[in-house]
Length: 90
Length: 177
Image 1 (cartoon, one colour):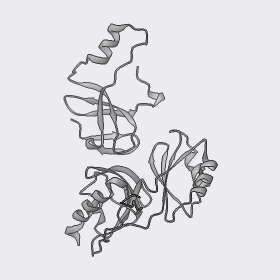
Image 2 (spheres, one colour; image 1 turned 90 degrees about the horizontal axis):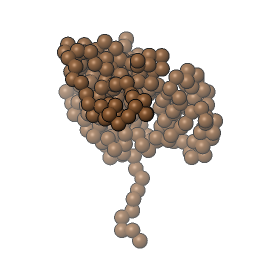
Image 3 (cartoon, one colour; image 1 turned 180 degrees about the horizontal axis):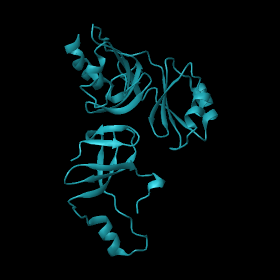
Image 4 (tube, one colour; image 1 turned 90 degrees about the vertical axis):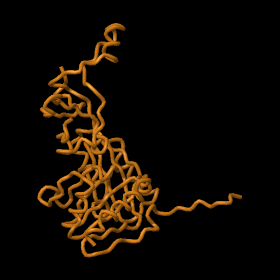
């Protein structure tokens, strides 16, 4: 687990200040059908490598962030505000 | 008739200030603490808040994008609070946190070493300059930390955690006094 998270608002902070929600996945369209939504809500990959996750800076700025980290090496490659429109997820 | 009268008192009114060569811990008399909330990304919001809140009375500390705490040493009447709200709305919303949060002052030559036991923030004066503020964990409690002087910090903590935070700080300070 990555231990220091570069919050875009607060700087480098320890992981104890954060709450992890889970993988940040592209959302299916509202009319995508029950199967697509069931997969989106319940099915998760467990990748060995790059992963985007929602992290909440609970004891800091209280913003939702998207942390891009490597589940194998624990390196964090990017951390951005989840509401940042300039870097919208693809 | 109620058999028990509820009385208003500050959260730390029965605590004795800590004094010593290394660390001093005290709580200022109850003043006013206002939480100001604007849209994140509203670049001029801080200046707008500063112009409405008299800067000689309120000091403004950043909390997070679009949010600030305004702290004054003197209490604010409800009428004055309403006037401030009217001056700021709808661009900025104010929430009166005067009774919701408690201020604790920690100071002394060893204060950075003491706070480093509880928080991961780099408190060196080059990194965390006078006037800098941050929301962070101190121990297991969320708190808002402001450097008000070279060796002086103010901690804002939720009222229900104030006693716990005070006792933690007293324990953390023992080796320095």
